[in-house]
Image (tube, rainbow, N blue to C red; front, side):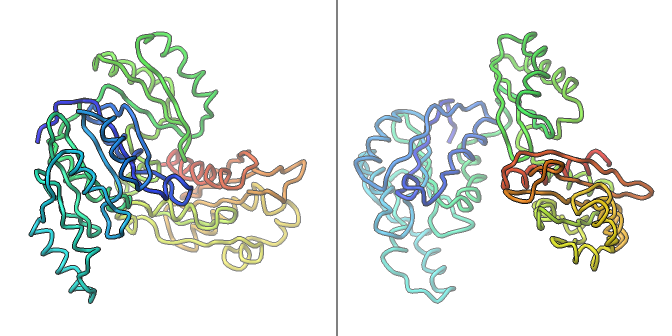
Length: 403
């Protein structure tokens, strides 16, 4: 089913999205995927589980590529299929293959095949069901006049699982992207703006934007000429240097994991203020067991001494948040786990505990390797959640720069 229209609309359905119970993340995922193929999302509309609201959103979307998420489940407020059928002017049909799969799913789990499950086998006539690899409600794809309509479950894991089937059904392949995105770590937005100024002045016809990520700041440029974009990207990479850890969608944890896999090296962690967040990030990617061995969450000084052999005198002389303690934690962690690298973090995440000498956000990070240990102090913002997030980013980046 070839897609000729390079403009799209997204309609996210669910009362829970408009009352604060659930964060709407599906549209963000869809936008990022479509960007790879040069498909622009003109508008994202979030509506209640309400027939008139859904119908109005569909009418407004018109003859475009329309993604609808939510409302495909077994509960009474899941009405997307019925409303889309009425909007398209087609009857509802039962997909017997989907029905058989649903019955088997219920039987395998010892559940009764009830009305709620049965309604998930309903399709507007002319739509094709896409088997859900995670949940029960299938995705659906079809054309009505000039509109290509894709129906997806609202549960993010299910929607993500269905996406490869959507790409195949819509015959999305290759890359028609009219933009590039570089991902940086360790730079603030003002600093990144300054560093990109000369490139932006050279390429005035490109549209530039940047935004915060959990790792740092991403910068993106868009324009109609692929050759101009390629040239701008090469120059910008040179300007930004080691601050760029990836392009596109690649996460910092993925970049570090791939580097460890390629080198055959291993790593362990000794975490205080992050309480396991660095280890969690290192194991985000499949195959992480090949390079991550384990770690110690040493939140208290007693555990730092008992499990990591940090001398008590270091706490007396320098405090837990110090160069000396971070270095001892990393070196002893590497010895304890027998790894090629070890990362240690110790800091004051707040909101309490800061002093004039060591304000909230003060963090020491160390990376121990064979015969060396790099230790660096950071002053993150006095916001507990963001400070911890930036600590994870800085820790992974310090390891990346050591490899």
